[in-house]
Length: 265
Length: 265
DNA sequence: ATGTGGCCAGAGAGGCCGATT
DNA sequence: AATCGGCCTCTCTGGCCACAT
Image (tube, rainbow over all chains, first blue to last red; front, side, top):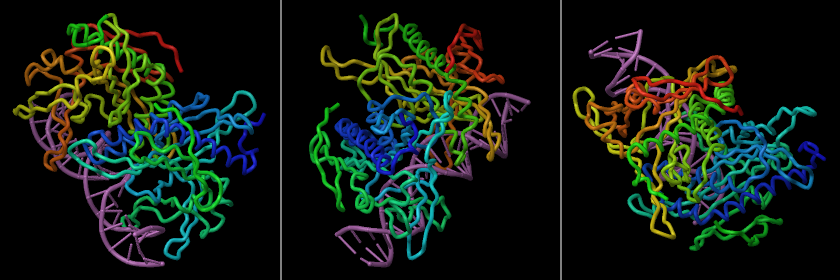
């Protein structure tokens, strides 16, 4: 009756991240119709509106797709966060699910704040070795009445709303083109995903060094997918109310895409 | 079997706002211990942290104190919003509950964006008559399958975290001194609360006209309380883990304060 | 054309401070 | 000392644009 993720093998832990991502992809798909409707047609008081829309939509999509909650909360910059019991074949695991919403007109990379980085990163930019330390804890310690503290594994997911602006005066104001969902590997997978600065999906951040802003970092979609196809999922809108229910899995640079069944909302 | 708030008398509608506020005050009181614990001890990556804390705490406090949900969502800048059925003696009413969280080192006024203003406002500032139109709709129209649309009354509440900074390096980082809860009157009460520019709880906004920022507006606590005591509630921390469970009601410039029972969390 | 870097832009949300009374 | 007005600061979040392959 294992309750500690640290007892899992690497492959088991990867499977835990995979099933976590699989569930939010299902949730996003089921909510995709309303998500697109709201995203495209909500009037914009300001251009910042898309940020708020993305956050709200992630909440609406995911809050109905939760697992057994653990009575523990904390506040902070992460958009959607839940401490919960996650059922897995390897045990019922305490998990700290962290999901961040992003809105973007790009669809090839994601910018992370240091506080959103789950693993120490090493990469090369302009021939120099750049480093950034993880800002996300590997787990959250939950004081346990019985046998010492419980460790809730932290799982870092990102939901990326890829869109373009259409109009500022009338609906539709925007076109939500697709919803990407990414699972960034836990710190423990450093040897697997970033053993050295040249082997990585990380890239130079978006910050301006000139104005010495807080450093950020980027995750490149193609490279992440090449290292582990299922970690990059994409739900595409092709003219239908709902997105295309596709799940990426398997091997190879782009993996294999297969449709999945879903119930709409 | 009334389902339309427009059939209520003014007094009945006031009572609806009052019971809505009463419920969130109960919820805030029950959550006050954890709220203070999180507010005071959460490390601050930046000074903006308090804003996020306030938003999260409002969500945590209120999400467990909801009424029968209506299956309808919309996204936007309001921190906490729920469309729901509110049971009242005057009928089961569709309601759009809007709650905004504010963090402040002041405790005498609240700044509202125009989009948070539920009634057209008139007031005098520096001898000139200033005006601001409501940015909140009186109700949300819900397409109804049976007998035409349903109108969800909009109820505008604010939760104000009054605090001061303590330290930037070690816990406690802040001191949450009290939690205020305000109910801003619905547009229909304009004749009651702001019949003319000199009779009002509104005041000049915080925006800089010089840099022509979007106009904002202020609500003055004392004046709001003088016009209707129960619309300004305050839960004070006096050294105890939980705030003092006090509810303001009755008449007079400050009304009457009485304690209420609560179950902690 | 793409993949990368990175400079800037805007807009929330409040901290504060200076007049007034 | 309070009550008001209002200027300005900070910092989030991405739009974009310029190179480099």
